[in-house]
Image 1 (cartoon, rainbow, N blue to C red):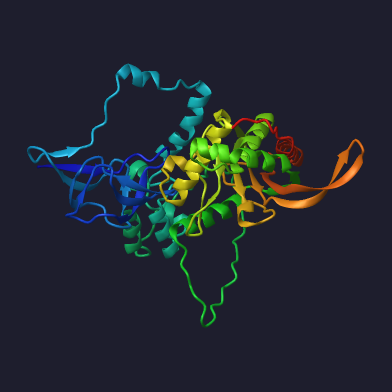
Image 2: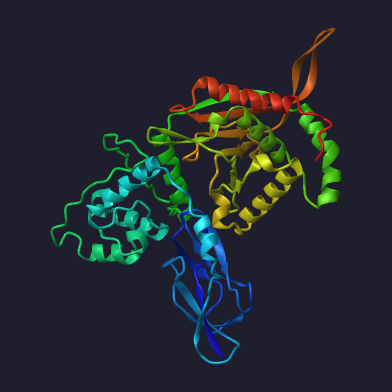
Length: 442
């Protein structure tokens, strides 16, 4: 028999650690290859970790609510084989020529820009990173640890990040000794703004009221929404769109598509197609803001706000949506929506969105004023499709007819998107939908 160390796998760019939510097996249980053995949570998404080998779990190294770093062992399995030498996952080494060829070449300006925060970090002590794991964030909130106190905590985690142990050690000695003077470092992407303390009205709890603690995902959503409203001055434009041709085209093609592909044809791929074409016409919608710089995105990655069974919200991302056909968009959307609702998304499935669409019509709502997901600068809300009488212009004069109408609302960041750009973009999406070609192939 041999031992095998199950390591926490890489979970996408920027994700360095995860919190253990629950183990799906106990010590002594046998597992098969590709079985999901543990549920983990990052600040992006919840997911499962499968085992690449079959065997018996003989030791769980990371318990519930503990934080594990990428590449750290979280359990030991007993596997079939000779000897008792511990066997760890190994990665296939790449030829040195291939590695060197993948290293990007930087200009002198890029090097100088990168060296600025590095040189500043060399002159300071302790942890000055801004990333906190979900578990650490929850402890900080519960113990009401201030930003100034966080600056005094020396992180012992990867890249000097603050770990659970660092927080607990700080709490054990909190107020008992003179704290070190911290050197505040402003975020490179956020201009320094002096704000008055926010006064929050006390909440009166009446007899019989039920107190429901926010779960981890709801806390993350709440923080992100408040941060977006503080960061971006929101403006919202509205338009009512005649989608009669879209409704007729889908009715004509949905049965054929489902028979051929084995999947449903919804309205969402049509909406995404129109938005992608409008982004290509108005690329300054597909940007992010970094301080006083505008980052114009090369790729068009569409985030798709999806409601979860527990009432929370997650935004899986359709990568390179401009390179997908209508059929490809339909398959990608169905796959992401299904995996989102069954909690099978990978961390990389929720990263890299450059523009987001929210279908509030799926809840029977006519319109909404969505909040921009940072660091994007715009988001589109699609309302319910409703039959209404409408005035149509014909060669023989105006007539009243029953049409399929839908409201769209476009929220945008007024720092970089003016009313003209935000309004013209919305009108362009409207025109693509109203003039939908009934001969479009799917």
